[in-house]
Length: 211
Ligand code: B12
Image (cartoon, rainbow, N blue to C red):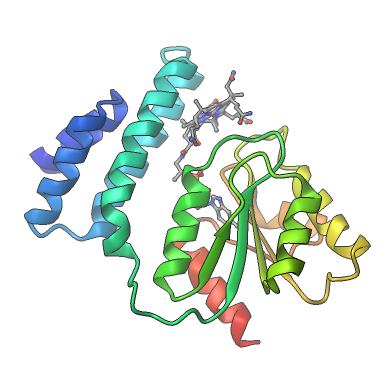
């Protein structure tokens, strides 16, 4: 990391929203790629998680770091999303019931918008049935579920089950992701697609729409 990247990294780690904003703007003005700026912030959030695990950080520290990251993401959004593209498909996205983590879900949404998809964001703490009713009402072809807690990832199975119960399982592609989720888990609950990060999620969504 160069000096500016390190300053941005530290601003996220310490939850300094104004400094994070300034550093993101500076990095872009210096010609750094938006994706590269994002990587610095994601790495910093990983470190926040590590510090929390070690008992050095508590929830308030995680929260202010998340706020700083969100401020940075807002500045990056126009760079990651090309507003001129016509929507090539519709996605309903949300974080599952009981889970309030939304940074990863927001990133996935941004990357999908960047690929020309329209994203309906249901927010966090979304009950399984809500994913399904939103998909039906909006005629969405993809449902994207995010979970960051081992205690909430099971909710994704409820989303698959709710799609079956509503008789729309064959009409929607169900994508799952988030730090505790993996391919094996995705298969075990009957989801269609798992990917590890936002960029690959957007690519997989575009591929799924071609089918
Ligand atoms: C920030 C944060 C918070 C913030 C969230 C703020 C917000 N608005 O999101 C706050 C303070 C609210 C919070 C609260 C809690 N948190 Co927290 N949090 C984090 C932290 C530090 C960062 C998460 C993050 O934003 N990462 C950055 C993003 C970019 O990464 P990501 O979400 O993984 O997303 C990427 C991929 O997973 C993927 N992806 C994500 N979603 C999807 C969806 C699809 C469809 C696809 C294909 C891909 C995909 O793409 C993304 C981009 O590449 C993590 C640590 C970590 N290492 O994850 C802990 C962490 C997730 N939290 C944890 C815990 C324990 C909690 C609390 C229970 C703490 C408490 N005692 O209250 C509460 C739970 C609250 C709740 N009900 O949800 C634990 C979970 C442990 C576990 N095994 O379940 C972690 C892992 C910390 C730790 N190491 O212990 N947290």
